[in-house]
Length: 151
Length: 226
Image (cartoon, rainbow over all chains, first blue to last red; front, side):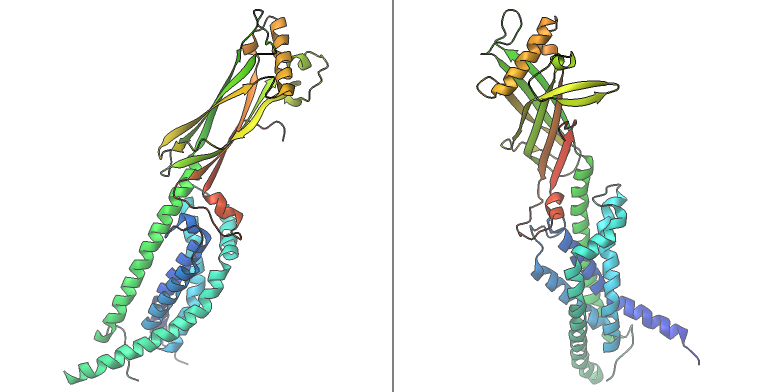
């Protein structure tokens, strides 16, 4: 069997590129949901509406980047561990300045425990966003194609 | 369905949306991290320096404390804040112990003292002042310091039990040729402050750590009763 490694590599890169925005959104919203009073936007309690808005918008934007629905769905799932890793990294940031609000080894478990709602919520939202993103992509492409053919 | 590959001219709207979304999220994360690190800096750098002095008003001519006298303590609780966030004093809990010299000299005393190991010897301390102050709301600016001054009076009318103990201890010191003001005292301070710009959670189900993020607790001295 002859595997085209270059094509496979390009595919992985495309999936990673597609998952960047949902992963960034998940990392940010998970971090925000844990420390709503000390992040951005500052609020006494985490806003579910804001979290949902950011996750859904990001997943739609991510879904628009994929060439095919299958790629978009894979990227939506890949965004979950990437986003979690990013949330852990954000919680570690004071540690880079030598400041520890939490024991470093406890941070991943702390994030997983207190951001579980956002982590679980992001899964269906990412899948839904991927589908919506693909629909938008198709709509945009089909509306632009006649214009290009008529030139 | 006709789909051009990456880099085709039809891809630029999607790439632009991607770039805008990434830029927005990076800005959000940057602001969130900056905010979070500034709060962590306050937690890691603020410190408390408290001082106490005790004087006696209306001393008798022989230097003893009469029944109508007053033992007055001045406690200054200063918080030094090298961090970038201002602080506001919430509560100052104070305890002032007087060294029970008669007890240490072997006399039987009717009061309840706290034994504190001091090498091979034992010091006996009596809790003469204990209480809290929540009304100061003193502001501690960023990169500055703020002080809560407390003036605590102890008279027969305010706390008979504590006053009698202080009277007995100072009278004992005077009888040994030591001034009442030379009797040693031990200070314990536990203070909490709110970090400015960090709102407290309003949800009844908010976890404890969310309250702790915006609240700074500083301590000086040992609470011998715990």
